[in-house]
Length: 258
Ligand code: UDP
View (cartoon, rainbow, N blue to C red):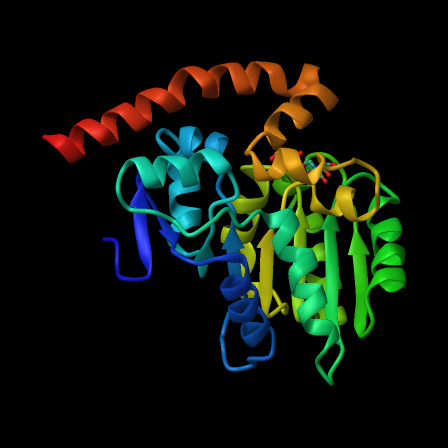
């Protein structure tokens, strides 16, 4: 059920927060040792909304998320059209830098672990973090091999590495829905205080991939930039989403009017 602080959109309970409020909440969780399991954040976009309709495990992963923020501009537009407006887009790749910036002003260093991206990329992202932000300690990086999610020993190895590093923040860049399913399965065993499922954020931090120019982000056109940079991987997915998403909006709109 939606509450005062969440809205229901295409079945997902999305937090009604802006970037500043989401950042502050996360930083306070990063300093909270009382929680028994790792709190995690998911960042839905149009593709998540489409998968959510048919993917039972993804729905379960959303149920145990501590925060759900709208990464995709079309979700914010739809929320306004459907008269349950979200304040703004809160993209994972904005949330992570915003959190690092806010944490830089704290007395205690923020301990960060980067999980995901191709071999070597997370280490380069760690170097960039050290260059750009004060008071952030990257305490571990790991790029799991393909298929790791089905390999028990590999998962145990990742969980042990995180336990040894004791991070406040775990940035997970494994792509969707792998990252959401992984954290939902393992968050009770993780020594991190907070995890953010952040897609290609580690690539962006490492400058391995370029984000779209700011004007494109402001106009909700970041997807065009991503499609142009990875057409072979994304064209089929975006075509499906462009077909299904308007139907989801129409269905909700009819429910609203009926
Ligand atoms: N990735 C990974 N391991 C995997 C699959 C993907 O580390 O088994 C990484 C990949 O290298 C990239 C990121 O996940 O850094 C993909 O993020 P993106 O947001 O582009 O994925 P999407 O959710 O759009 O598929």
